[in-house]
Length: 187
Image 1: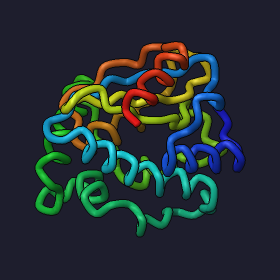
Image 2: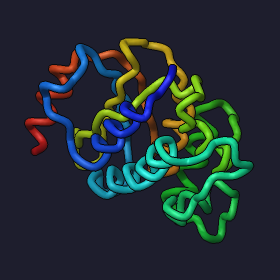
Image 3: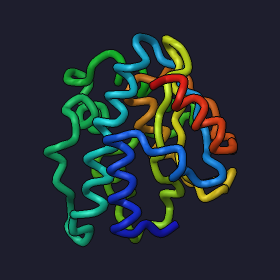
């Protein structure tokens, strides 16, 4: 999937502010995220990781050997570099959850993860749409996958787990009206 400067700018805007119901595509992909702790704090952590990555997608020179990571939260950089001493408990537990979810897959190294946001990189098969709280310890992550039920999303799963997910289910395709109803209920 190709990402453009316009689509990245729109994605970054959706990370900052909830999109309008009228702007939604016909269907969205839903990930159900179970968290330990406060769902609002989880959502904030997840957005704090994805925002700088999407911003890099729109501004960085991906021909460089490494990308600037100054805006990436320290806890995410720590868990993505294996620096266990600096990673908070929620990130360490999330790393373990990701490894279990992927059947022993390795956690993402920070630079490899950031390079997935290269607009010419076709393996990131999603764009952020929104997150809604579906309970005190459950968050729904909504992404635009262009109606595809199977798409490259290991990078999103890594971010979701590292931000403190205990379990992530999905994706499932949902009509955008489902998201819109949740959006209105959680305003």
